[in-house]
Image (tube, rainbow, N blue to C red; front, side):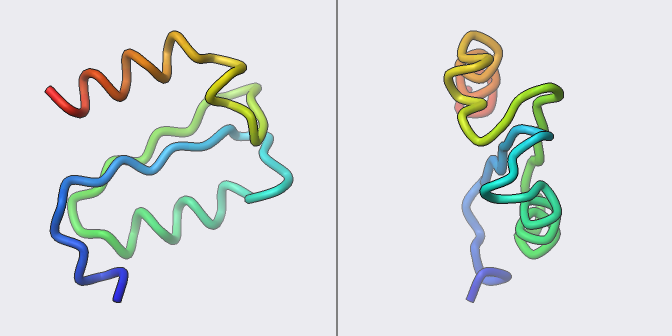
Length: 64
């Protein structure tokens, strides 16, 4: 059902995530038409906390 998602979608992850590899993010983003993919370099699974200010700005911009 993933390709049927019509809502604006932000897919984000850390480039060094070993729990959920970025290859999964690329597949997910490719399945959701018009989605935005943001990979944070030098960040892992906890990229939300490792680079929280950049992520917060990205989310704010995405939602604007």
